[in-house]
Image (cartoon, rainbow, N blue to C red; front, side):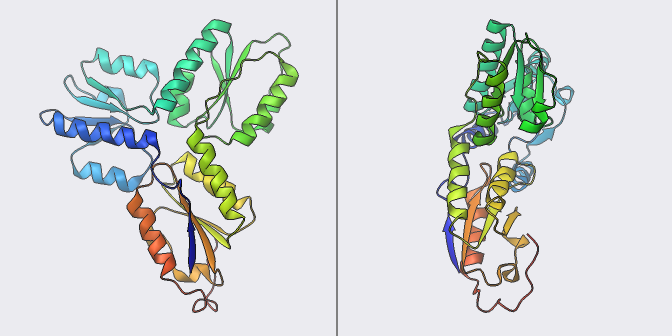
Length: 295
């Protein structure tokens, strides 16, 4: 079977930097407990590896004790939570993705300068989004689609700033901006979607146009991975979102001679390699009579 693998598949810069900081903390602070406040990235296999190395993943800042080394996850955390950690005597290592940190600071500056409410395009319960809205000086409203935004009653004299979760779809965000400029021509719009996210989505769309099926590798809690699967499925081809090669069987690709392969920004190379090896060792002719699994 022929596999077309995306050049952008795998760790992004922010994920790589976050894990480098965690590795350095494990080496430098051997006499301290090493904690992450929430999963440092959204990949269960990576998290399991760090758990075996003694890293504790806690859900609440109150679990950190004085002297603990607490790594702030790549998605960032609410600024009030970071204040609690510092006040409690923890050693805080900020592993927030630089693109997310830039978005946080831009939201802080723009909402203060304009005394405006933040309109944020994103997933309301995503940890990055909870962190971003904590920097909104005048409150925030999170919406997940243009349709949801349209349902909001417009305020003729409202003051708003528009921004996005860094991993959202740029094409949808552009449509949101056009809609809002029709209501508020001078609305400040922050460019907070990561270029790496745009590049991954565009490459996925391109590959999906030339293959029989798409495989997306990555954690199911990963928002950017799920959006890659959505982008591929929108091309009308069978799309499979898996975390590891164990979830795939040759029968799933009956009759597919060419398969596209990409992965989320928190997916390690070894997991992508394993899926590629499985696909390339599969003979679509031998599987032609086998039942096809539902994507």
